[in-house]
Length: 181
Length: 211
Image 1 (cartoon, chains in turn orange, blue):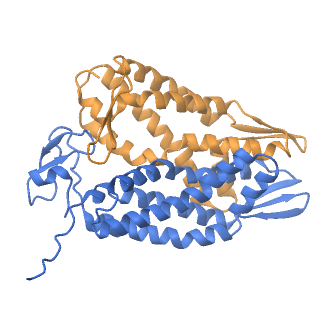
Image 2 (cartoon, rainbow over the protein chains, first blue to last red):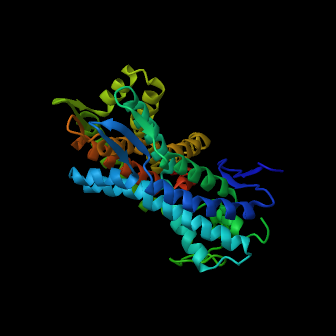
């Protein structure tokens, strides 16, 4: 049954979820598609303001981090760079590696364990959805005073997030040691 | 040392691949026989000490984080200082009230919730309390899930600082932003430092009264 979950009988936490029979195939496709989309989300402007004193102002994640550094807050810049770009990139990249390995039927090895440990540590710090929330707030905040518009990077970021989410059930750590999903 | 339920039978579950295996008593480092990850046994003292320290630091900084200006906006030479709360109020006044509720929840409710819940969890775990364990487990999962959202305002400030840069308008980040970011990072580290298995620790044997 799809959507079925196994709960811990003591504390009620979710231990495992049933995933679709072709979950591994789909996870591989989703994560591979997420890579170029995330690259585009980093490279393309996320928000732009047209006609500010005759010029167009655009912002990327890297630009936001650079602005913080420029104003004398290097630690804040590093935090934004890590949570908005580097760790999400690691999350998506490792997901693609694990999904492709599982799809090919390669037995999980020491690289799997190492990556899963890394993913568990970075999980709370990879914050694409929160960056997206921040972008929505910025659009709403400036809409009443400036001609602000979403940039081409914003839909790419949203799409990368949705694809990464969709691949998650097949990449549940204990899933990977099962012969078939 | 208090362990998970299986510890009574010399069993421990791997936190990475989920395999339950025998744990040998007395050995410090044990690896999961299937995936090779180090088995993470419950270390009551270490978990509580780390959580308490991080939490105390976060609680102290939470006050200046809300009092210091996080952002200074300049428009046509006029300066306007904003704290976290006045930023939410300004957003409310422009009519973007769903967004102002989102920012209020992420920047004030979520950090305050993390401080209160972790405080409660640390105090009850220290006493090995059996009081409302299910609810406490649920509270831990709640802050684990929503805790990261307090980063929202940091992203907003960074984007605004990069976006609003012209001869007539600008956004300058204030010290409050750095203190607020420290609160966010410290509360997230405190959440991971707390081992939720401590909620289920066996109560200490009560000293028997002599007849």
